[in-house]
Image (cartoon, rainbow, N blue to C red; front, top):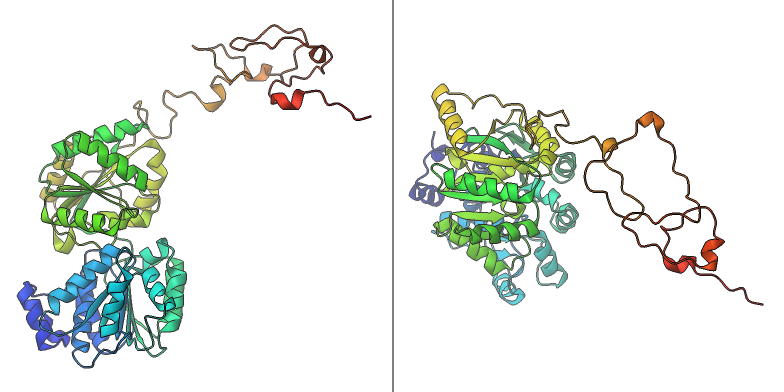
Length: 487
């Protein structure tokens, strides 16, 4: 089945054909007719299924008639990040090349003056992040009363980034009679509440179960110890041994970890870039452009790159840090295996990450096999392809010392560890432990006690000699000074 039956205009169909696409994806096939019929749409589909074109193509058809007015955009698309907003603009430039449409981009890190100039000329399509959009409305340079169509893209990411209050403010500025398109990959309760508030009898399109991963992505996890250098050593080994690696995104949970890992990989001779929210816009754009062009095969990134970015050549995704929220895992590995391609996702798992991995496996409804290195990844991948099913069953997770999960391994239970002495030092070497039944609370030593090991005993003063039996060595010195009573 082709795009011709969906009701798109001849100009749009010609642009689609020129791009090399002949068959619409399921979300496009089901959503486009409802958008053209002016219905509200709630689209739920896993990442990489073509959600962007599902609203860009019908919008181009609808905008062929009409004219934009100064400072009053006809349509509004809200995106959670600058990179996603810029990517959507590229789609309009690509499919709307034969139309005279004004498309403006309102994102942070760009001059207000340049953006204001574009708004003054009149805008057919306004693509914006919520913060910068509200800045323009508060300055009086933008009116939303002429918006006929509102698109809220990557709504679950909006929730994660705290944009839901901004979305609610923006929706109140737009006419009640607008058409609203709402796209998301997961449906947490807060998102469900928003859809019930701002969508009017929507057409719900759910082409896949929420929070599912792409079929073509082979997923694995590699167990490591607790030390940071073990994770870095394992990552370098996986990168050097990986087969068919074209481009890879390496995800970290924190911006600081992104910077540290980027410097570490550079030091070991890898061609790598970095991307996180604290970088200025020009540096973020340059890093993405280099990655897309293949000038740097590796990109270390925070979750700012986890949603919606479409880089088809990405063959591998590495979770250097296992995400704290299971939904983020779905979006991260969605950067590979896009548009029916294959891909590989590998998570480096420490003992502290086991709880997060259990939550991830529960969310996606499948177990993630455990492997030791790139050779096992390749072998499991080949076995999965040969059998037509999934890779082999996961082994029992093991801790750093080789003990199976659920056992304490070689570590001492907490109650058996050497207690810290009052002076702040520990005796070196193992110490004999008294049986638990024989434990008695410590009593204060007499005033003429022997100096303890590792502590310098203060000289005796008259006050010390008359002090109470209790040990006040844990108190700061100023509290032990005598107090003179006023006469």
